[in-house]
Length: 298
Image 1: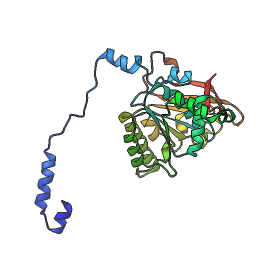
Image 2 (image 1 turned 135 degrees about the horizontal axis):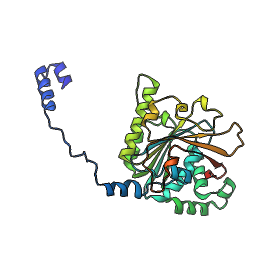
Image 3 (image 1 turned 180 degrees about the vertical axis):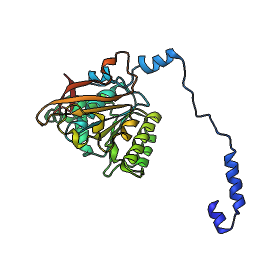
Image 4 (image 1 turned 45 degrees about the horizontal axis):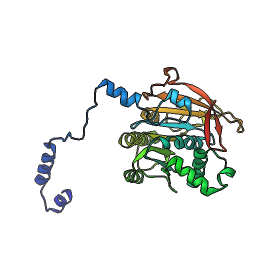
């Protein structure tokens, strides 16, 4: 219409008339569903009925299940074990659902991630994994239903590409590793652009399935054991404000140490019937076993 006005095919009055029609249209409310304010049903659906439970009992006791609408992220310094954490938990969660786990990977090579997923699912080291690979493949498919989909983007993933993939699947869980590299957002400052990314991830969680994202810790977290949310890289408030939960993973300066230090710096999740209120913002030491891509409680 604007182009027609510019070329003289339409008048300004025609344009204003069209705007006036839009202004007085009734708003459709069909897609707005009110919350069911039945207390028993709220308890049954949000607490009594579990969502996706963690492999680590500490996270079950502190965060509780992940359910549709939940968005949170882990953050740590490089080479701390973020991908191993994802592989360990994802291979445990996939057996609890019939849906797919969509893993959007724009960090390390997707083939390396794939091997870690096999290791975590089967609890085997590399030598054991590639001994009789046909049998290991069958066992992996029995355990996971072959429903962990690793989407390896050579370049940084774009918002539109991710949204198109989400529409093709029925995801039960969505992973963004690393979320800060997703493109398609604009902001006057870097922290405002990051805020848009994290707001979008929250909307994805509401529309499709729970979202676990991965972010980096800033330099001040180097050598720190229990990381706090002010150590999240690139933002002091914007990213943190959009998340329902935030888990920092710290480690000692000694790279041979297998101890990792968990600190939950934010937790707005409802939890489960067995969740402990004392651990909602708790800390714990855990054990990493990189040879089988798993974390274990101590």
